[in-house]
Image (cartoon, rainbow over all chains, first blue to last red; front, top):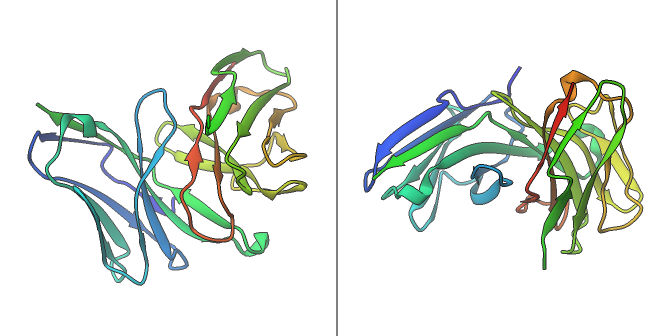
Length: 117
Length: 114
């Protein structure tokens, strides 16, 4: 069972418009959430994160919203640019009970964002 | 500062062969990990290490071995490759495994097992 789900495999938006990528999770032990961006033939790169004690975090054109009651988070990109075209992974973090003090990330399956010029 | 490096970039194996995927980081990070990425599955954690000499299993450890003799290197060994291990493998590192912090990923190794 996937604890972190990204139900939209792909999303296309026009340049300059808003991109909204969604992510749902089921494990209430997750207390930190991250978004990673991945270009083809490269490894994922960190984009933005949010702690479960917050409901919003902004970094330039990127904003992440967290709705704990709905176990839902979203990434907003405004305005979208062609260079934003990539796969976006949502990830959630918690301590793994058997690992002592080490945290682990659980990733969603990713959403391919295409920004059309 | 090369970050996280992985070799090889591509590899084709026959069923039953063994090989080692190499991973190195030059950021003096404590925490290193291996993930595999499969279509529709996201990245799944195979093994991780919180420091030299300390390793533990992740979500999908079967068929893989790891060791960490130095801070810099974290190789992943496939003892007897199976077609189910066809995947893209990513190594990642971060400053600490105890706190939430950015993980830096290598460029990946694309492995095909025939």
